Length: 146
Image (cartoon, rainbow, N blue to C red; front, side, top):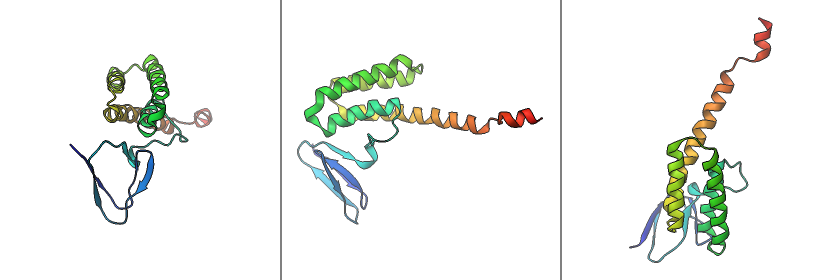
């Protein structure tokens, strides 16, 4: 079974640690043997502002991009996952983290990334909700003026 990916014009991706970019037309790539492939949209920038779920995702991403450091990234993944499980109260998110842990243990890293995307989306919802509440709060100096 081969892997087939369709690329948009100028879409960037990584194959076995090598950064690549598609040309100006849509194209399709077919891989007939095993390759570690990640699209730009699935990559997290390690230098960016990472949420706790983003740090867990980054560890799995690095397992794919740098197979030589697999054991170190698994240890980082377990540490970050357990850290997040210890403070998170949402049972659905905890279930996603546990499933991701099982998938990493079975070396099914792409499916683990899929589980962790749900965690990141949930964190983004929480952050957006928090920002909205902050924006709607009446400034204290206005309340004191009344």
